[in-house]
Image 1 (cartoon, helix red, strand yellow):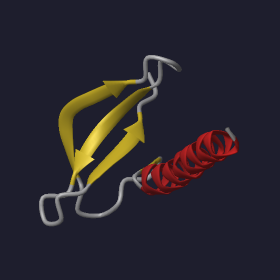
Image 2 (cartoon, helix red, strand yellow):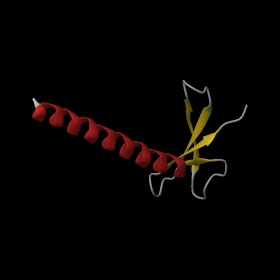
Image 3 (tube, one colour):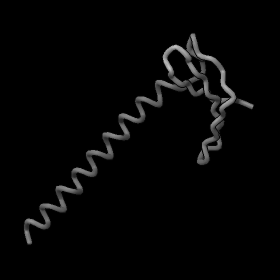
Length: 76
């Protein structure tokens, strides 16, 4: 019975480590690709994203040389 508790504990610990790691990696990538000032080389697209939780609207900009996307908060 002790090995079952150990196995479940190990699974929970692994899940927490993976969850925290994914949040840290995702936050870093997203924060580098959005902001107020548009980086040089980016072109405005017709794509607009609306966050269903906050209701904020982001305009998508695209750099054709690198394929990167940039998300700028739209103010109406």
